Length: 561
Image (cartoon, rainbow, N blue to C red; front, top):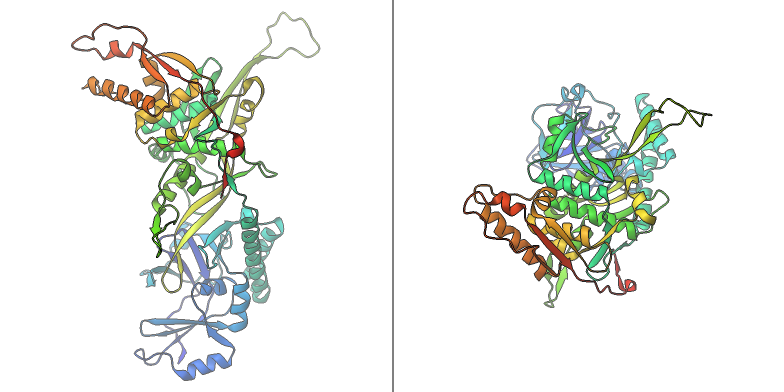
């Protein structure tokens, strides 16, 4: 068997059919069997073994390759074996990290992709001609391939020294310094693996924000405006306009104007994103009321956790699903006992999509108008200029994400990558509402988070924000038109009786579920007209009453991972 010229590719970029991450493989030797119908000869095995080589098993191939070690690929028939020096395999597996990147959508690279991808064990390989060096993006991610589900860390998880190592690695490769590059690739892999270990060690227990079946969350103008914006988005994007080429939702109350905008994420590298106004409007159409639940839960977690030095705390997709009452998977063991096996993948993915949408939101709060007095003057006939200020910030800020991967095939190829935990903090907009006279909190129940239907969920929130500012009871009187407008509740114009029935059914459900004590129309109204009665009904007022809460001892709140 001799090195074959049938594979004239300087490098191979391996792209999973299910994940965004790519792994670059340096030039390596291909050996093709003389007789494709026969397995590798014993003579070849003896020769490779004598030279200190051994077969590479499983995902170790990606680790050995990304640390720039020599690889020999032996092809016979439809089978392929990969060999590398035993010392290199042992060294690589000490830090099982595949240096990775997101495939850059650049024309200069796409034109070099060979036609006809080669399929092997469910993995798609795009063969790149004439690319003897990795792209500049190589190493911006480290895929940790342990026995557990693979995790992905980015450059933001590394120290400044490790990031400098990556830059030096690129320089060494460009100058052909192979030995230096191998050392630096190993150092970068070690840095990713150490960050992975430290990350898992310092991941704190995520405390349960509920005391009994209730938790505290913010009820301020920004929170309510954001929930209203999300509801409006789900209801067809009503009240969303364009401002500075961004979809914008604004709400004005006595305390001032608050706006919510969808803006494109900051992407320093990776695929070129469509950030047109039309694409942001498409993103707008994907928002739903569950996103509002996720926001309230993230705020609640931020209120009960002890933040790190940057003010960051943790939330996980599994916890979000637990808090919302989503049933996990249970399997019965040999003793007939049901064992919890986590949540369904599709549910975890949907939770992550909610956080991704929330991360695209910015909030703007209009501040008071100030009149500047001329410097050094106490009296002036000329009226000083007025200045209005607006404070803008992200709704939430995410600094770190933990991803989970499924493994397929004998080589444990990572696939189906999706986020499962986030290190985050609430944007600085919330600080004024935590203490003092501006403190604005509300108590929300698990039941309110479990509602799936639009009417029950939005009406429960409305009652909570207006009546559950503390554990005492209370009453509010509201016009139906006001409630429908603020909550963007759907109205069946062709059959308004269905709307009335749906509203009254939802309010009665809140009574049954102890979300409110009672509700009734404020007056004894007469009969509605036989036709065109919808405006008359919407003009009517209702009273909503809640009873005082009996809160359990806060010391009994549980803490779970």
